[in-house]
Length: 247
Image (cartoon, rainbow, N blue to C red):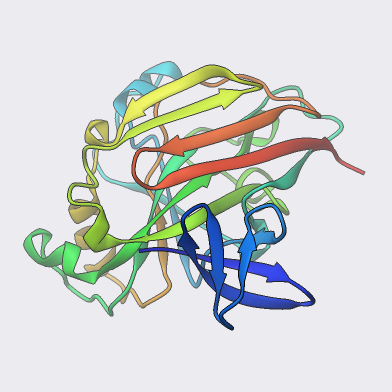
């Protein structure tokens, strides 16, 4: 099942995909363009991976990491499908990052690789924008890069884990104004989903609503106000976002 959260008629609703329309939790059926899309869940703790694709590490002139490079993101960063993301006026290079987002569905502590998938509720598409001007270095993305307001669209859907038989074999792509600028496959992650869940749960408890952003493949192009950026992951969804000038 594909689930969403939307604003419609003055209220926030849970919704499900219904043949290109949305079936709201009050039984009404509405068109996808009649609503304001919100992130499919209200994220709890959000973990993001740096350099988790070898080709992206190479693109940035780094060796792939030997242990997961993880940082946290604030809730202020998340917006939904078809939302806008501001580009700072002084930025010289801002780029998208198409990522598979893993949503935890059951408490996980000291979880093994073999049982890790049993703690996953589902998957979303994420676009975790980065402003390179503010990076201290690529191993430690700082707050000005990764916790900016509205810098991480999520959605449109939370797809049930049962509907994604192999999350480690999904094609990813990004287009800017209709031109393909990024392609990859989740099989190319340095640390796969079971490894990430096992690693994080080895020293802290993961809870339902926590999210893991699993990194992005190579292909970084500067985006400017007015650009439409579309991140797509096979079977998970097509996430649309527009860059605007920071007011």
